[in-house]
Image 1 (cartoon, rainbow, N blue to C red):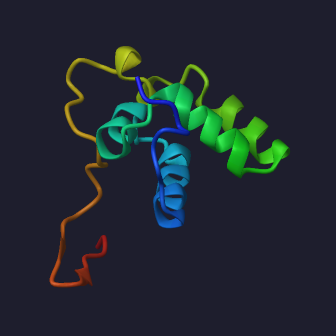
Image 2 (image 1 turned 90 degrees about the vertical axis):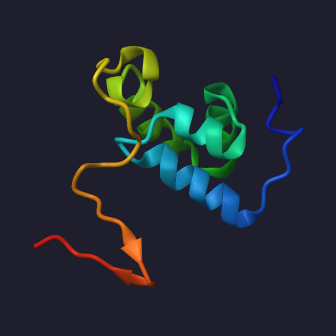
Length: 97
């Protein structure tokens, strides 16, 4: 397993990982598939990059949350994105009606 120090991340990647970690419907598995960071690596990154109070709020929010942990999710959930999210095509963002 890679440690967070072994993986070189750009500022843009770090920002995206933090964004994905805060999203309710994005499991840690999605972050691992995209960036190669395990849940523990994400926790370490969040601890390092965020203010202590923000980190504590985030940890409290995601701890035990079923949709952040693949093992706790429903068997029928097979995708990472929300059903309300539409495809982005030709740089035009589709909006909900």
